[in-house]
Image 1 (tube, one colour):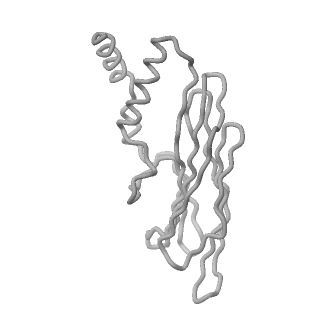
Image 2: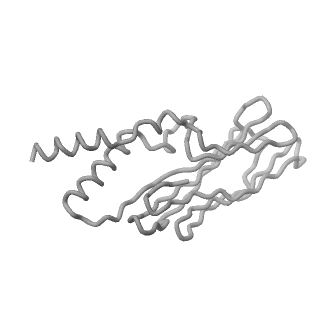
Image 3: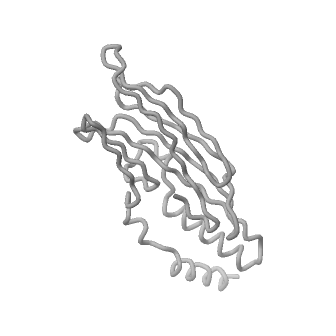
Length: 177
């Protein structure tokens, strides 16, 4: 049994990709607004959130890879589960983050298809001039979606409204985008 565990660990260490951890925000979409503010939408979290709820750690990914390999060796079902998060961060023209919205999806996949089994969302507002009108999550097929509408006020006067749908999709190999 110790030999099997040793072999599994060696295989995981040689097959587990380490390079993606150095590629933070490589898939980010940036939207600029007329006033110089901008919004970053990405599935790579490059900012630590104070309660550390939003990012999967290296150990969790390693455990998931080990489980997948053990199931493969034992001939168990090839249905796998993956959980991921896509975020939206909004910054003013000086680079100060004013609010964030997260969509989290849980997916099952099996090399032929993928299905979203759970979708959730949360938001954080860091500037009192902003108010969330609505923020909800929905799932459909292999996609988790966060729909939100947020409004900026100054002295009680509405200045800006941002309404978006942000999607997180999983393919049949467990890759999320």
